[in-house]
Each structure stands twice: as C-alpha cells, then as structure tokens.
Amino acid sequence: AKDTKNGVVAYLPTLQTEASSRLVLLGDLRRALDATDQLSLHYQPKVRLGSGELCGVEALMRWRHPARGPIAPGEFIPVAENTGLINRLTRYVLHQALSQVRAWLDAGLEIPVAVNLSPRCLLDASLVDQVAVMLAEHEVPATLLRLEVTESAVMANPALATSTLHELHALGIQLSIDDYGTGYSSMVYLKQLPVDELKVDRAFVMHMDTDRDDAMLVRGAIELGHNLGMTVVAEGVEGAAHVAALRDLGCDIAQGYHYARPMPGADLTEWIRSQDL
Ligand code: C2E
Ligand code: CA
Ligand code: CA
Ligand code: CA
Image 1: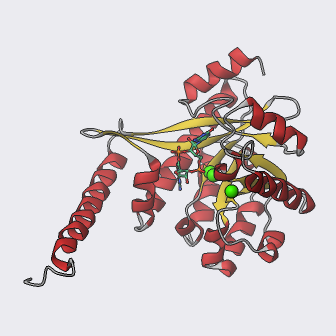
Image 2: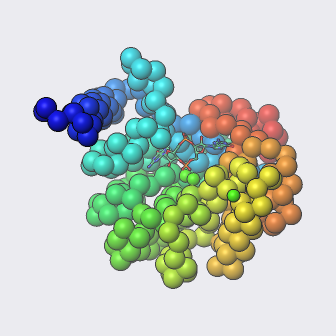
Image 3: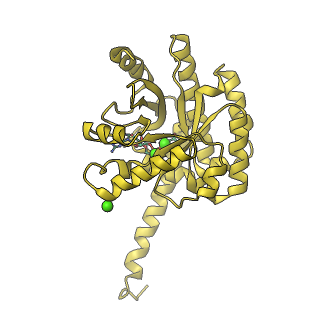
C-alpha cells in the first residue's frame, strides 16, 4: 500500500465504492419489487407516419426510490441485468403491461404494448411458458403483445435466442429488433428471425436532420428493413424536421418527444381521447 506512484492505491477505493454502491442499488431494487409504490410503468405512443394514428405503445420502467427519488432505467437496468433480478423485473413489467392492456380493452381501446426484453431473459428457459400463462391470466390476445430485443441479445447465444424467439412468435406475439444500428449487425440472423419490426436507434434519428452520415444510416436501415419485409420505426423523433425527413424516406412509424413523452397509463388514455385518434 506504499506504492502510490502508479495510482493503484488511489484507484482501489473508487472501485470498491462503485461495487458497494451497485450492491446497495441491487438491495434497494429487490425491496422495490416487494413494495407497492416504487416501481411503475410509463407508456410512450408509437405513431404511424402516414396517417398519424396510434399503432401501439412502449412500456418503460420507472423507479421512485424512497430516499433518492426517481432513478433512470439507464442506471438500474444494467445493474439488474448482471444478476437474475432482471428476470423478476421483466415479469413485473409483463404483468403490469398486460393488466394495463386489459384495462384499455375493457374501456374499448385496443392498444398493442411493447415490452423490452434483456439479453438474459432470452436465455431464461421458463420465459415462454411464463408469458403464455400471463397472457391467459390477463385475458389479453397474444397479438397485442410485442417484445423488443437487441441484436446483441441474439448474438450472445444465437441458437438458444433464435429458438426462444420462434416459440414466442408461435404464441402469436410480435417481435421487434431494438436499438438498430448500435451493435454488431448480421444480415444472416436478421433474415432468419421471426421479427416484423426494426427500431432505428435514436442516436441516429436525433441528428439525421443535421448530420449526413446519420441521415444515410437511417436511410439504409429503412431500406434494409423494408427489403426484409419489416415495418421500420424511428425512435427519438423530437421535431417536425425529423418527421418530414422520415416521411420522405418512407419510414413507417415514429416514436419520440415530438409526439409524446412516456406517461402513466391513465394519462395515455386521456392523451388518446384528446388526440381524437
Ligand atoms: P429504449 O428501449 O431504447 O427506450 C427508449 C428510450 O428513449 C426511453 O428512455 C425513452 O424515454 C427515450 N425517448 C423516447 N423518445 C425520446 C426522444 O424523443 N428523445 C430522447 N432524448 N429520448 C427519448 P428510458 O425510459 O429512460 O429508458 C432507457 C432504456 O432503459 C430503454 O431504452 C431500455 O433499454 C431500458 N429499459 C426501460 N424500461 C425497461 C424495461 O422494462 N425492461 C428492460 N429490459 N429495459 C428497460
Ligand atoms: Ca425499446
Ligand atoms: Ca430503443
Ligand atoms: Ca456523423
């Protein structure tokens, strides 16, 4: 511990602090799952670019920590993903989302919901049966559930992930490739997967109106998706310039702050009525 020249001594405490704060976060997250008032879902509309009609919503997790206040999913999801806790969180999200879809159905609204699946969930042997049971429990048709996965989730174990996706698809569930453009992409797998929707990552969409490279990437993703018979969604659509550019490129669906921020289910019901969709 004498050798402080190369920074080893100064560096270790930082690592320990990070590790222990991750542990604290994990413990808090476990407790949040048992509490009733900490975790919730927000829903963000997906809008058809041609007609402006609502074509579904994405469910996004929200956590209000009793001491720290709101913690972004970008902070707590990656921590949960390193442990089995993500499987419990995903079951929580599926239950909440399906009971919301049921409530919308009871109110005369048929709104497909998309739920994010972490890579680890695709390797969970019990996932398919659990999803089937939950759909039955909530009396929601499988066609109203969509699951979003990233390409890297598939690449982690292509054989297992592909067979899980085929089983989910066989139940009637719709599948999307999320964050397209951010990871290693393989046409070979993309072609083989029973996926009908490609979501172009917001990192490219956000600057497509000012950055030629990003605009080219979005154009390429739309062409690729269409060539594979998929519907293409642009994420992170923040302005009218994006909407115009995406329409020109023939993009099918848009999602972003330009239309609406993620919001509680009850607010979304009101949003729909106010939009007269
Ligand atoms: P994602 O799946 O790519 O979700 C879209 C993210 O973009 C959301 O962030 C949403 O609020 C944000 N967003 C939507 N429109 C705009 C826009 O116009 N501009 C900007 N700047 N952002 C926009 P959020 O809710 O913070 O979630 C972040 C990520 O956390 C998600 O990215 C997803 O990877 C993960 N996540 C959230 N909820 C869940 C969940 O229930 N399960 C899993 N496995 N992951 C989740
Ligand atoms: Ca997503
Ligand atoms: Ca995404
Ligand atoms: Ca660039």
